[in-house]
Length: 113
Ligand SMILES: [Zn+2]
Ligand SMILES: [Zn+2]
Image 1 (cartoon, helix red, strand yellow):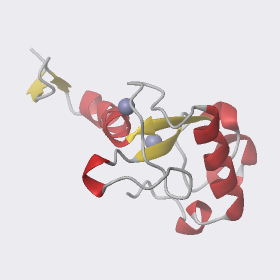
Image 2 (cartoon, rainbow, N blue to C red):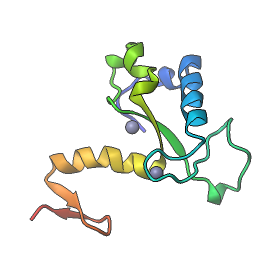
Image 3 (cartoon, rainbow, N blue to C red):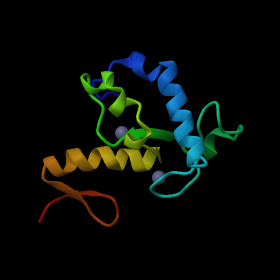
């Protein structure tokens, strides 16, 4: 996953701690679809095929500039724990709208009108 953000941020102690707080607060449930997610270091072991990856999303998208701003990069108010599916939807929604496409009710990409 690359949003042009320096990698060491995601490896920082501060980020790992905040990420953990977000998941504990949400009881390891996706904030959008409510499904349980698997988070390394917090979840009890479950079989790989049953794991739904959890991602902590930045509501204000992180970039190379605001990654240095703790009130955006590390503030729980700007963070949302969501599953991989909901996360992809969130980010694609953005690209999709820009390219004049939309999702139909089956989740397939179609041209607007
Ligand atoms: Zn979800
Ligand atoms: Zn995100």
